[in-house]
Length: 105
Image (cartoon, rainbow, N blue to C red; front, side, top):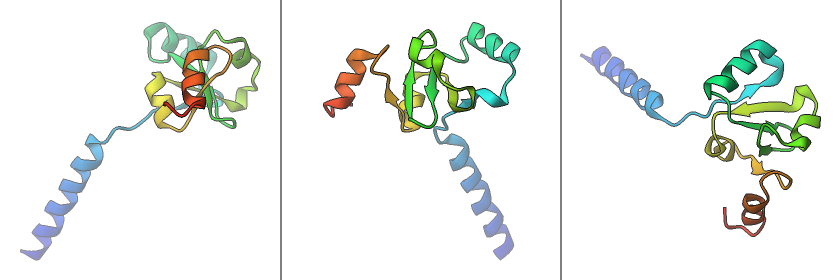
């Protein structure tokens, strides 16, 4: 009977872990260019970021295009980037950056 209780606790824990919000960050070095373009086209990637500086912005941002490939990461949404501890870019996300800077985000 005791081993059954242990197994049921394990199952409950697994269910709890499955239901938690998990952010998905894709490192640019771990994805091919063709996979990247396919994911962008499908809408699976909408936001890019700099992993070292913890900054996120649009995929068309000129600042983001200049960053090194090893620092570049991608997210599905701005919310995922914020949940991962990234701040808005001051160049392409000026209004969100001002809110973050003033402590409103």
